[in-house]
Length: 263
Image (cartoon, rainbow, N blue to C red; front, side, top):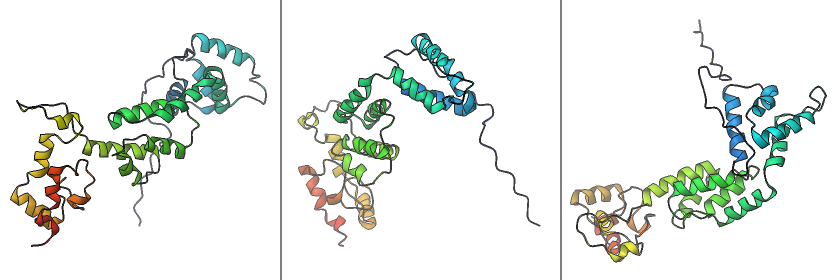
């Protein structure tokens, strides 16, 4: 006799979840309508709010100019007729009223000029902010803009992974940035500040950590086919993707006889 399998839980309604209510929408130019719509949709999905009740429910969050618009919009619809707007039609009317014509033009302009200047986390935040004003931009175009804006030393390492979407590309870029980024504004002890730091070159601490390997570390890396530069397996120092490997002091690493695999 086959054992009775327990029924799969119904995930349509999550019990005891109390999500934060979306903020009121006033219809001000300083407010992000797309962010508000996203929060409202998430809130309705979690409660859940039936689709036929979402329009009047969302309208309870309107204040000031948005409330005046809703009054006019409500009175223009025959709610007992056959042409009652659905949720998508309601959102389209909302965008037509409160999204300025030049908002998307300005967003495209910011997107074309967006480049990573500091950390990947900051770049991701700026990119997502712009995307709020371009909700209809297709995923392939988003991904292309995202990768092209990355720093030169991060862009090829992300592109070679062929991410399927922006979320995957963001995760790859964050990992690469965590591996390659080194703070250059610290001066431990009384060590004099080196000019190579201001020029963007490797710091003395970086060079020490790269070039000073113990005999046991060299033997282990040589046997495993590891890199004397980053200490990772799978490649040698002359193929290392880590930055600054062309520095003169690092040239000695490529010439280590142990890494060649010859005894």
